[in-house]
Amino acid sequence: MLSAAQIDEFYQRGYVILRKIFSAEEIGEMESAIARLQHQALGLEGKVEKEGSEFVIQHGLLERVSWAGAAEPVLLRYGRDARLTSPAAQILESYHAHHLINQVHLKLPGGGFYRWHQDSGHRGYGTADWEDVNGKGSYVQTIIAVDEATKDNGPLMFIPYSCKAGHLDLPYDKNKQTVSDKFNPADAVPALMQPGDVAFFGPYTIHGSEVNTSDKPRRVFINGFAYPGANRKKYPGRGELVRLV
Image (tube, rainbow, N blue to C red; front, side, top):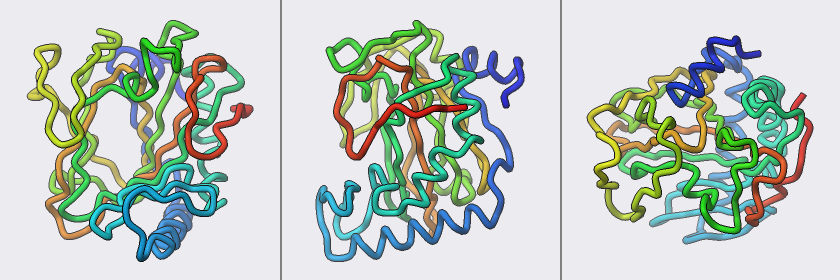
């Protein structure tokens, strides 16, 4: 469970990182599941639905798997683990939420660039797809570090306190970095995490990452939970309403 100070940190700074939440053995299970997903992706290219999951492969390399728990049920089990859902319930102030995201990002050497963005844009803020029902963002993203995140392997970068500005409607081009006078990239702080650490952040927190320049992957396991009634968009898999606690 999060302390009052940690919940305040989430809403003020925009994110909070909990250390050593999952054990080495549990991370090993996730690694094995990811390796099996990579094997399933062999020979595929582009965006392919397989075993209920959506595989995204670029130039023969697996970039991400959406709703990974369909092809690898162990990932759905960990995606709904109480160590994720109980803090999510505290943040959302709800016993239930829609489990929208159950996703693996592989961040392989030489790849994995993600431009600055807010998840509120991905959720569809300002359209019929999304409504901030609770007035606090109505969404929490969780990221489990499967590998160590270092300065060299394209770590997740946060812009602290950017959440306080709400939805900024940032420009989005998947091929180039975001340029906007609404924030300063020089303010970014890297989320240097060890395997088993978990980051929680809200939909208005600006974040992104650069290319992995190391010779090893930086894999993460992402799960996102939406306040009941906030989402009307169709996502890969079964983004069903689940009990958080």
